[in-house]
Length: 209
Image (tube, rainbow, N blue to C red; front, side, top):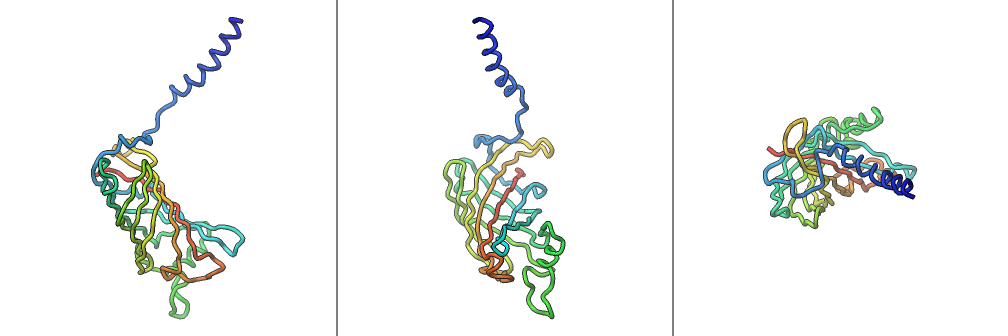
């Protein structure tokens, strides 16, 4: 009986000991770690994935990287946060070199490009009003894309905060989701067989300045 109890005690204690010995991640989902100030994006670790439906067969996605911008944040008044970021459309990436070239090629015979053209302006998103609920926030803002500005809502979730061991800077990270209709921004190619609705999946890290 004593032997059985000893085996059970070891079985229970072993995983607990392993957990306590595991290294803690630098970033933790703890709002108390967030300090007030101006933060800038870490462009090397900030991405926006766009996803469309292709011909009704499957979903296809690509990426915008090098997201740059600022977040002015006060944890005592998170609803007053100000977000202003730019997305370099010219650096769009897909798994197909041919498709990437198509997104950025000139219009045929001097016409309008199918998508963005060879020298597209950066997209820009500027918050107007933020509603905070716990560690989630609904960001109401304006997106300027392809020369058109429209309101876009981003559902954001706080992921973690802490000191980045590489840059030594205080860092906060968020995940966001949004939907837009590309036709509203003048991107009309292949409608409707390539979906008008575009899903945006956003991950951004901000470093305190």
